[in-house]
Amino acid sequence: MKMNGNLTTGRSFFARALQVLLLTLLCSAAWAQIPVFEIEIREHLFFPAEFEIPANQKVKLIIYNRDATPEEFESYELNREKVIVGNSQGVVFIGPLKPGEYPFFGEFNLKTALGKIIVK
Amino acid sequence: MTDAVVIVLREVLEAMLLICMLMASSTAMGYRFRWMGLALLFGVFGATAYALRLEQISMAFEGFGQEIVNSTLLIAIAVMLAAHNYLAVKQLYNPRYKVPYGLFLLVFVGTVSMAMTREGAEIYLYGYSYGVLAGNMSAVFSGGAIGVGIGLSIGTFFYYALKSLARNKRLVTCCVVSLILAAGMMGQAALYLSQADLMPSQGALWDTSNVFAESSLMGELLHAAIGYEASPSLTQVLLYLGSVLTSLAAMFAAWFLYRKPESGEVGEAR
Image (cartoon, rainbow over all chains, first blue to last red; front, side):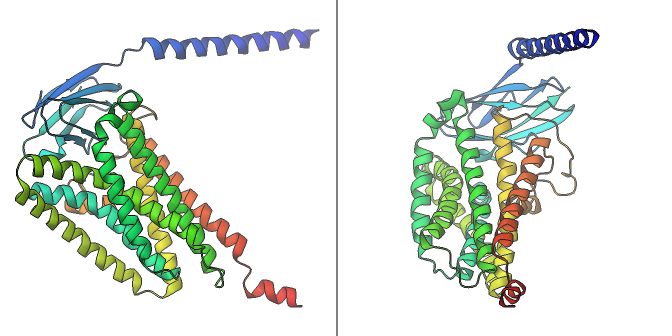
């Protein structure tokens, strides 16, 4: 009898813990707002060329390419690379990152297309 | 023009090491280079098709089509390279065995054409829009030619270095190179999957950019050869190691199944 009682409380505890865990996961997935940052490419330059993002958090980066030519958004420090064809846009997830400076560049215009993300 | 040299060389280098390793391996497996014609044909076709369809592909899968295609190609190449290692070890321990031509073609042509599709698409896109459309043909194409030339000479050197080894040693060396190249591919696949948020992304596990910056010549060479990343994430490191283990497992399986050298035969004879 005693053992039986223990077992049920054990099970309901487990079930409740699972419920709470699932709910938390669902809520965090649905409610955790991933900050969105936007950059534009115009005349083979990045606008803004420098901007801040929060540390230790995943960030969504939308890159609009306003030029007719394709560009490759690339960063060794961020471990990212993505081709964005002319007059289109691309999304890249970055982070969570430690505070610091993370340069990026456009591979097809190595001399002009330069930028930097500052993580604070 | 220097832009074109750098861009083309970066893309060509990795594919070149892969192609030269497979060429050396195919000589050890007793096949001539006829497969290369087919691989180049498929590779050029694949690269052109990928470049022309890049906009639609990018828009697919909620804007992550590019990441999905690239990581799929990279994972497929890594799997094919593990298959190569299995076949190479099987042939090593079984001198009368020759890899069937169909299977040989599948692995060798498959690997090279997929690698060319991925790297070639970027070259095509760059050359077409910055060379042809921008009316800057001579600078872009001479730069590109220099890039290909440097890549080719490194590749030729690499091929003859492998070729100078005796057959068995060459097979084993090719397996080692293949294992490392495959791991580098998986590391890159991890990058694309994290970029699309399909795999978890974390901060860098370590940072060796002050030793070899990835943008330096040495960094680029190491990146092409061993998949070097100055500041890799945990996901990248895990997939890299996973690929090494898969290749080793494939080689071990071939060794385990096909070893039975003299000792086994002697045992049976008694």
